[in-house]
Length: 371
Ligand code: ADP
Image (cartoon, rainbow, N blue to C red; front, top):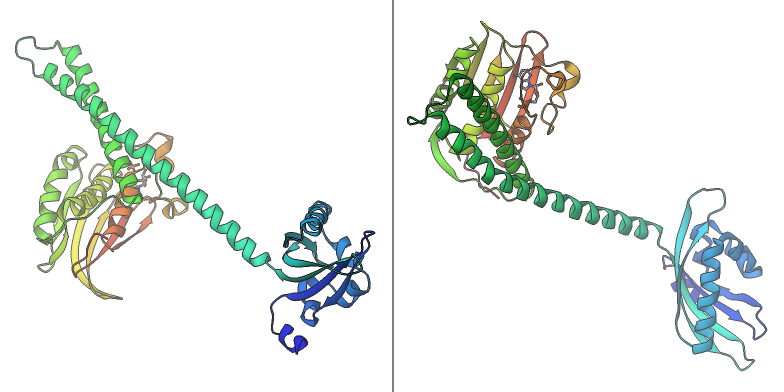
C-alpha cells in the first residue's frame, strides 16, 4: 500500500538511520525517488555516500549540523540543499524534512519527505527580483516627480521677473539688456517645458495621471491646435494644412489630445526645411475593436534614419539631433506615446530619410475611461 501511495507523490519518502557511533544509512527510499535529481536511489540506499558526494560541501555541512541538532532535541529536521545532477551543470534544489524517532538501540531514525524545489526557487527569485526592480522604479518615479515639481516653482519666479524687466516702462532695458533678458526668458521657457514633460511622463508611469474625457469635435480641436503652431510654422517657412475629413465626434481628454497633436505638429515643423509642408489628416477607419479615429501628421522634412525609427518614442532618444541639430529634449514623443496608450490608442511612425515622416495615431471612437 505504501509503495502504491508513494508512487503518486512528486517527491520521495525516506527513512534515514544514524547509529550512536555516527554511521548513517538509508533504511528506505520510495520508488518514485529514482526520478528525483537524477540519482539512482537504489545506489543511495546501498551507500548513502552516493548522495553526500552529489551535494555541495557547504550544504552538506549545514545538513549534518541540522541533523545533530534534530537528534539531540528530537525536533523536526528541515533542510534545503543543492545536488549536482550527474551529467548537468546546473544544480537542482531539494527541500527535505524529517521527524526523528529514538530507537531502542540508541540509534535515531528519521521519517522524511524530500522534494525537488528548483522551479519553485527560481520562481521565488524572479518574484523577488521583480519586486526589487518595481520598488526601485517607484522610488525613481517619486524622485523625478518631486524634483520636477520643486524645480518649477523657482523657475516660474525667474521667468516672471525676466518678463517684468522686459516690459518695465519706468526703467526700460537697454538693447543689449533686452537681448539678454529674452535669452533668459527663452531658455527658462525651454526648461519649463522640459520639466513639464518630465512630470507628465513620471506621472503617467506612476499611474497618477487621470484623463478627463469629454465629448469633442475633432475637426474643431485640430483647427485650434493648428493655429497654436502657426507662428512657429511661419517662422520656419513651413506651410500647414488641415484635411478635416468627415465630421468626427469622440470622447477624449481635450487637453491631453491637444498636447499629443501639438507635439506631433511641432516636430513636423521643427524637423522640416523652408518651403516644406506639414499635413494633418483626420479620418475614421476600421480597427480590431470597432471603428477608430485616425489622425495622421505627415511632413516633408528631414525624415528619420531607419536605425532610429524604432527608438524615437523612447525617452531622451534624439537620434542624430543629439549631435547638435534642432533644439529639443527627446521627451516629447515618449510623453506622446504614453498619453496615447492612456487613451487606449496607438501610434506609429514611418519615414523616408530626406523626404519626410508620417506619424499615425489611432484612437478608439467609443468612450474610454482613465483607469
Ligand atoms: P525632441 O524633438 O525634443 O528631440 P521628441 O521626443 O519629440 O524630442 O523626438 C525625438 C526625436 O525623434 C527627435 O530628436 C528627432 O530626432 C526625431 N523626430 C521626431 N519627430 C520627427 C519628425 N517629424 N521628423 C524627423 N525627425 C523627428
